[in-house]
Image 1 (cartoon, helix red, strand yellow):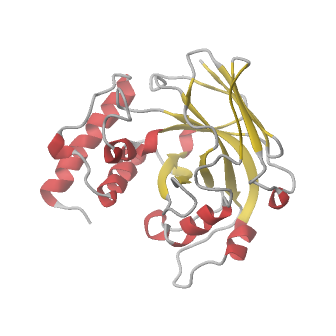
Image 2 (image 1 turned 30 degrees about the vertical axis):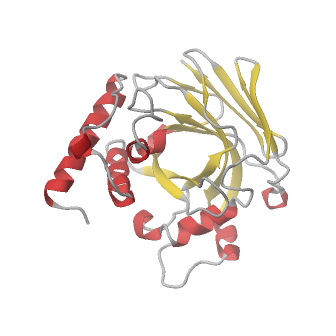
Image 3 (image 1 turned 45 degrees about the vertical axis):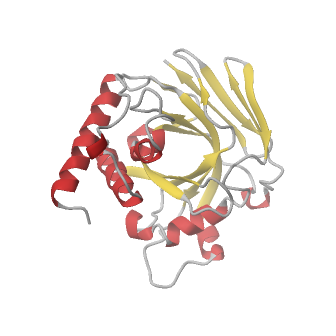
Length: 257
């Protein structure tokens, strides 16, 4: 657990990130002595920032490749909305877009000594949905601020919009699933089996239920788990209408104010 002077430094960084987001006045980088230097510090900052926006409604999780250890961040419940939602407010500046597949938990998976099996986790999943994760950042250029700093800023999470549940989701072949992302009617990305985490999306939920439990306190019925981008990071503008259409998992849309 972080204590003392180092905790105070990281809390100062949290305040800088919160102010930058709330005022839509991004910063170039964090002061060197206040910059997170480990995943423990990154996750401390994520959880502290998220706490300013109420209870978590779930988690975003992903990995740079199918074998890599996943990384995850909380998603505030108040930033979640159903398909067709209009996203506005003073914190909408970056307007990044990622088409994703998310799972909605139907029953609790509390921490326990024996790891949950894949079958147990699948049984706890109520439904599978197409989603758009909206990205925001406290930084002028999130790629230039340093990896730990970018991740500490809630892994750029800014909003979560979910579409209707997919039918018979366990029969979906994510290796052949394709997606089209459009902004104002123009196709911006088309891809197939393109999630960097790989096409076994359930393995991310299993990992979160087991290895992630010490941080999450266990997954709960009603939690959302979104499993990484299929389309990279695409930028939109104020007033843009966005739609993500998966070949079998369904469609989801949003509108920027």
